[in-house]
Length: 171
Image 1 (cartoon, rainbow, N blue to C red):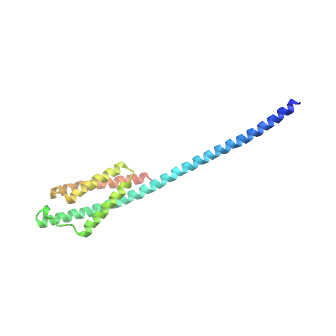
Image 2 (cartoon, rainbow, N blue to C red):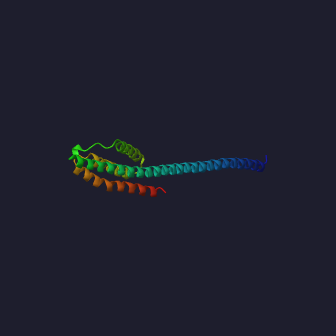
């Protein structure tokens, strides 16, 4: 038996096997890289969608806070006017139904949008402003209502400005 022929044949078989195994390994590596790129693309797409959702939410929150502040100050002014006309804060008239309904609708909208915001500081600012704002209308005395109204305006401005900072950060 000629060992040279056997060795040559064995090397040819081994070389073919290595070529096949090498091809399989290369394909697996290519598939892993493709899977990795697809996963990275999905993560980037999800982040882009989350950012777009946050932008829309924050823009909506800014609008709702502005409209709600306007309605709140209108209600505060009407209550003060009514209290002066009726002689005391305790005997002030009810708010007109349209204004009362608008305030409730805007408060629900603010609460809904606030719950969708990811930023803890923004949620805290909105909570503080809305909590204080109720006393501007429902304060036990006119002095307490005026004090709350004076406090709530800068709080609302701070919440609206923070939302603007967050929006700019999402671009």
